[in-house]
Length: 79
Length: 489
Image (cartoon, rainbow over all chains, first blue to last red; front, side, top):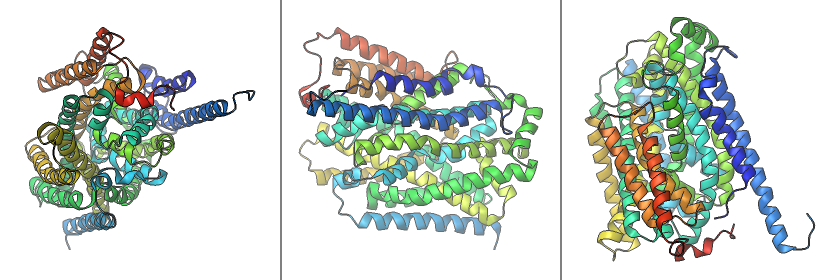
């Protein structure tokens, strides 16, 4: 199958870095934010931001697909 | 009326309501094998979201997550992370899988392995492993149902009897209606579960502490270690967190039933859009974790953490609310259990029995055999549920450790031309054997890492090395896949 673009893959790595690999940096009780322990607050924010990242990945891939098919149909069309 | 009668009759009514919706949805369509398993490939975005949410947010999220927040503390946070990250992975895997599914008429996960690697024994092996590791997941749902009835009846109905009733209902439900029924019941289930989670998560801390903030402030003062990893355990630290989140995020949509569900979508774009909104559903889990932490302070000393949510609900609310929460919980167990049974029985009949033992079977006969397997698998899971005392989360992690071993075969099969059947088969055998050995001999976690993750690493390595050993000419895409070379989107 066609591989996803580098940009999409980099975008996909952001939530993994934020919610998974960096755990030692944010797994703390303080400072509490909105009454939540910091680790709780951090993960909940990143759930929302993960959605944003996937949304960005979606747009990136969608524009890439339409650009590709446009190029295939009109070879001479300028970028 | 006694509180237990009120609670139980509400739970029962909600389950019956769910079943009626299911039966009705099922009888409106003629049930061919294709209709029964993938709903005729016509599910739009909303229906798709319901089906996916219906199968991912199970009784594990409801009782198990609060149970771990109660008994383990900090390590329960992995649940918030992996369900969101699984969608990032799904974004890459589901859409191309859907394209291939349509092209080759795939209905199940082994269908993919058969089409990509052209070996019916590999496909049969995938079916066996898939069914084997779906059983703990199914067992988890039955245990959840048993817990709900046990707590709601104030101990009047034993867990074993409750699980037997649940199994009968469940098998009947799946038997008649197939995948379409499941998606419809999800509507009721998701609505009730969201309502229950948010109500409890806000109200319980409010009653005992005056709000979520003060609740956490109290916990941070009384027992701050419970809020961070490793919490109440001594071996679930940061290395465990990273390896477990990776394992479960990669495996989230590799479960045979989630995999099969992606074939029900109307288009690849439906699936892509679905991954954008799915993480948000996860926010509801925060409320469930709040309840677990509140229960830790309010009703300490329960020997089984999985009882904590219902125990605190029973203590805090009138009986009718216990009934609604119990009913939501019961549907939350039944919907995924139905999907699991449906998938496992199809795998058995279509990808194991027919190709290996009875090649002459027609599609109709396969559908019949699958329905018989519904009953058999329900009984096997019931047996395990009665004779086991593992926590809900541990059951789920066991299943994940097994099914995620399919991941290399799936992702390399989609994006790496050189991967070979021998490589995938060898890697998978190593991964599954490693997982089974480490977990059955109680070596999980090993060296601070999740044992399933460790096996997955070996699996990947073996798959790649064995594939590289094959001469380049013999490798590459099989004939079946020549239509989906890199140029076809």
